[in-house]
Image (cartoon, rainbow, N blue to C red; front, top):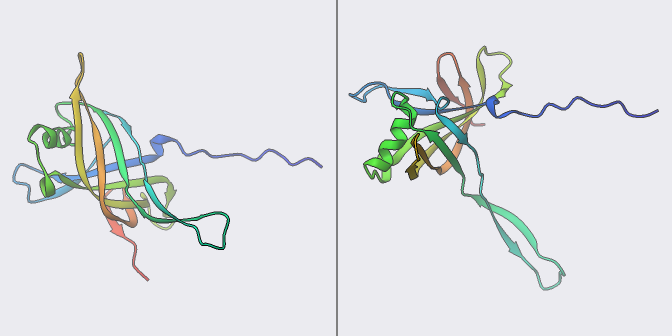
Amino acid sequence: MPETAKKVKVVQRYEYADYLNLPKDEAGKEMEWNLMGTGFTALDEEPGAQSESTKYVNEKAASSDVVGYETKFPFEADQIADEKCTNALYDVGRNHLIGADAQFEYVRVEMWRPIKEKESTFAARKFLVSAEVSEVAGENKQKISGNLNAVGDPILGEFNTSTKTFTPLESE
Protein backbone atom coordinates (compact mmCIF):
# COMPACT_ATOMS: atom_id res chain seq x y z
CA MET A 1 0.00 0.00 0.00
CA PRO A 2 1.52 3.38 -0.97
CA GLU A 3 2.38 5.89 1.74
CA THR A 4 0.01 8.83 1.94
CA ALA A 5 1.37 12.33 1.48
CA LYS A 6 2.29 14.03 4.71
CA LYS A 7 1.45 17.66 5.35
CA VAL A 8 4.65 19.65 5.68
CA LYS A 9 4.61 22.87 7.70
CA VAL A 10 7.42 25.12 6.50
CA VAL A 11 8.13 27.98 8.88
CA GLN A 12 7.49 31.35 7.23
CA ARG A 13 9.57 34.49 7.88
CA TYR A 14 6.64 36.28 9.51
CA GLU A 15 6.65 33.54 12.17
CA TYR A 16 9.81 35.02 13.64
CA ALA A 17 9.37 38.17 15.71
CA ASP A 18 12.47 40.26 16.41
CA TYR A 19 12.69 42.84 19.21
CA LEU A 20 15.26 45.43 20.33
CA ASN A 21 15.32 46.62 23.93
CA LEU A 22 15.39 50.44 23.73
CA PRO A 23 14.92 53.33 26.16
CA LYS A 24 11.25 54.14 26.71
CA ASP A 25 11.87 57.90 26.72
CA GLU A 26 14.62 60.49 26.35
CA ALA A 27 15.75 60.03 29.97
CA GLY A 28 16.56 56.40 29.13
CA LYS A 29 15.91 55.06 32.62
CA GLU A 30 13.19 52.59 31.62
CA MET A 31 13.64 50.12 28.77
CA GLU A 32 11.03 48.48 26.55
CA TRP A 33 11.07 45.81 23.86
CA ASN A 34 10.29 47.24 20.39
CA LEU A 35 9.22 45.07 17.46
CA MET A 36 11.59 45.19 14.50
CA GLY A 37 8.83 44.96 11.92
CA THR A 38 7.80 48.05 9.97
CA GLY A 39 10.72 49.25 7.89
CA PHE A 40 12.74 46.05 7.96
CA THR A 41 12.93 44.42 4.54
CA ALA A 42 15.46 41.79 5.65
CA LEU A 43 16.55 40.44 9.03
CA ASP A 44 18.23 37.07 8.75
CA GLU A 45 20.30 34.79 10.98
CA GLU A 46 23.72 33.38 10.18
CA PRO A 47 24.85 31.12 13.06
CA GLY A 48 28.41 31.13 11.70
CA ALA A 49 29.46 27.73 13.01
CA GLN A 50 33.23 27.49 13.47
CA SER A 51 34.75 24.06 12.95
CA GLU A 52 38.11 22.45 13.50
CA SER A 53 39.45 19.39 11.70
CA THR A 54 41.84 16.78 13.01
CA LYS A 55 43.40 13.91 11.10
CA TYR A 56 45.10 11.26 13.16
CA VAL A 57 48.05 9.36 11.71
CA ASN A 58 46.15 6.08 11.62
CA GLU A 59 43.16 7.52 9.70
CA LYS A 60 42.59 8.20 6.01
CA ALA A 61 40.12 11.03 6.56
CA ALA A 62 39.95 13.97 8.94
CA SER A 63 37.17 14.45 11.47
CA SER A 64 35.55 17.82 12.07
CA ASP A 65 34.02 19.22 15.24
CA VAL A 66 32.04 22.40 15.74
CA VAL A 67 34.08 24.42 18.23
CA GLY A 68 32.18 27.71 18.37
CA TYR A 69 29.83 30.16 16.72
CA GLU A 70 30.13 33.66 15.30
CA THR A 71 26.46 34.54 14.95
CA LYS A 72 25.28 37.60 13.08
CA PHE A 73 21.94 38.93 11.95
CA PRO A 74 22.26 40.81 8.62
CA PHE A 75 19.58 43.48 8.29
CA GLU A 76 18.25 45.97 5.79
CA ALA A 77 15.63 48.56 6.64
CA ASP A 78 13.97 51.59 5.17
CA GLN A 79 14.84 54.61 7.28
CA ILE A 80 11.44 55.49 8.74
CA ALA A 81 11.44 58.73 10.73
CA ASP A 82 9.14 57.58 13.54
CA GLU A 83 10.30 53.96 13.98
CA LYS A 84 12.38 53.54 17.15
CA CYS A 85 14.34 50.50 15.95
CA THR A 86 15.46 51.94 12.61
CA ASN A 87 16.35 55.22 14.33
CA ALA A 88 18.40 53.48 17.02
CA LEU A 89 20.41 51.60 14.38
CA TYR A 90 20.80 54.72 12.23
CA ASP A 91 22.14 56.62 15.25
CA VAL A 92 24.87 54.01 15.76
CA GLY A 93 26.25 54.71 12.28
CA ARG A 94 25.46 58.43 12.24
CA ASN A 95 27.16 59.10 15.56
CA HIS A 96 29.98 56.56 15.05
CA LEU A 97 29.08 54.77 18.27
CA ILE A 98 31.45 52.04 19.38
CA GLY A 99 31.76 49.47 22.16
CA ALA A 100 28.94 49.36 24.70
CA ASP A 101 27.32 52.43 23.10
CA ALA A 102 26.67 50.35 19.95
CA GLN A 103 25.23 47.35 21.81
CA PHE A 104 21.61 46.32 22.29
CA GLU A 105 19.66 43.49 23.83
CA TYR A 106 17.94 41.62 21.00
CA VAL A 107 15.31 38.87 21.22
CA ARG A 108 14.39 36.48 18.42
CA VAL A 109 10.96 34.91 19.09
CA GLU A 110 9.85 31.68 17.41
CA MET A 111 6.13 32.29 16.98
CA TRP A 112 5.55 28.74 15.70
CA ARG A 113 6.75 27.38 19.07
CA PRO A 114 4.11 28.46 21.61
CA ILE A 115 4.57 27.60 25.28
CA LYS A 116 1.37 25.60 25.66
CA GLU A 117 0.52 26.42 29.26
CA LYS A 118 1.20 30.18 28.87
CA GLU A 119 -0.92 32.53 26.75
CA SER A 120 0.92 34.71 24.19
CA THR A 121 4.26 33.13 25.17
CA PHE A 122 6.72 31.58 22.74
CA ALA A 123 10.19 30.04 22.68
CA ALA A 124 12.84 32.74 22.31
CA ARG A 125 16.53 33.49 22.48
CA LYS A 126 18.02 36.68 23.86
CA PHE A 127 21.31 38.00 22.52
CA LEU A 128 23.54 40.92 23.35
CA VAL A 129 24.41 42.33 19.92
CA SER A 130 26.82 44.89 18.59
CA ALA A 131 25.22 46.96 15.81
CA GLU A 132 27.46 47.24 12.76
CA VAL A 133 25.89 49.82 10.44
CA SER A 134 27.66 49.41 7.12
CA GLU A 135 25.59 51.61 4.83
CA VAL A 136 22.99 54.36 4.74
CA ALA A 137 22.09 54.83 1.09
CA GLY A 138 19.41 55.09 -1.53
CA GLU A 139 18.51 56.96 -4.69
CA ASN A 140 15.18 58.05 -3.24
CA LYS A 141 14.18 56.17 -0.10
CA GLN A 142 17.04 55.88 2.35
CA LYS A 143 17.98 52.38 3.49
CA ILE A 144 20.10 51.29 6.45
CA SER A 145 22.00 48.03 6.28
CA GLY A 146 24.48 46.11 8.36
CA ASN A 147 24.72 43.33 10.92
CA LEU A 148 23.73 42.72 14.48
CA ASN A 149 26.76 40.76 15.71
CA ALA A 150 26.23 38.46 18.70
CA VAL A 151 28.36 39.20 21.75
CA GLY A 152 28.76 35.95 23.68
CA ASP A 153 26.24 33.13 23.90
CA PRO A 154 22.46 33.43 23.54
CA ILE A 155 20.19 33.05 26.56
CA LEU A 156 17.44 30.50 25.94
CA GLY A 157 14.03 31.42 27.24
CA GLU A 158 10.51 32.49 26.41
CA PHE A 159 8.94 35.78 25.38
CA ASN A 160 5.43 37.00 26.12
CA THR A 161 4.28 39.11 23.17
CA SER A 162 1.46 40.76 25.19
CA THR A 163 3.53 41.92 28.16
CA LYS A 164 6.75 42.13 26.09
CA THR A 165 8.81 40.31 28.70
CA PHE A 166 11.64 37.83 28.25
CA THR A 167 12.07 35.09 30.84
CA PRO A 168 15.21 32.95 30.76
CA LEU A 169 14.84 29.19 31.12
CA GLU A 170 15.77 27.95 34.53
CA SER A 171 19.14 26.25 34.45
CA GLU A 172 19.13 22.66 35.59
